[in-house]
Image (cartoon, rainbow, N blue to C red):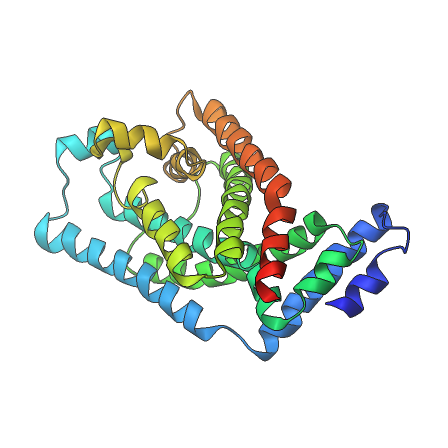
Length: 286
């Protein structure tokens, strides 16, 4: 870390636009090199199994138990009669979100374990640009893995091509912003606690329950629905589903704006508190 940070930044402690690009690219290249030489197969297999089993069980339930039909209540709450497609899209988005969150949220605790957190703390390199580099690589990595899951879903009969491409791209951008904000809050918790697995799994299972990946959020008790509304991933997922089915609702733009604003708010809070979390991690090291 100290090698690239020293070359990426000026000694004055400030960065210009050229330095920003260097920081982002150096972080991307570092992540690529490490991943290419030591690919995290355990994370990939676990996430693919979770997504694959979710889609497979949904397929079995839809055809073997439901007889290829859904109840009127589900159609009313979800806006579609395609239960299998509903779950397939949710599983793909869940996998993308989890993989991207892992790349962003584990950044500082990995630096601590590798002994390079001190170098990152004192370098004049922007920690925000460092996180952006991790984010760009995480998007690249997650998309490749989601494609594997999407092929499996298509093989079983799901439609994974958006009917409204521009709305899909806007919703995906909002999802990335939302995931970045939530990842920073998760990174704070993990960095302060010095622990990753329990913290991140609690977050992921909470998301799986609240965000409506496999069932409409309206099935949840009303107080829990309000809690789900505080997670910016929820409205972004709703609009992604709308773009896939072509059933664009009139409040899609409002939902995307709400998701992006909430994600940016979480990001601002996370970046503001990040130095304190890193200081806490350094104190724990000593």
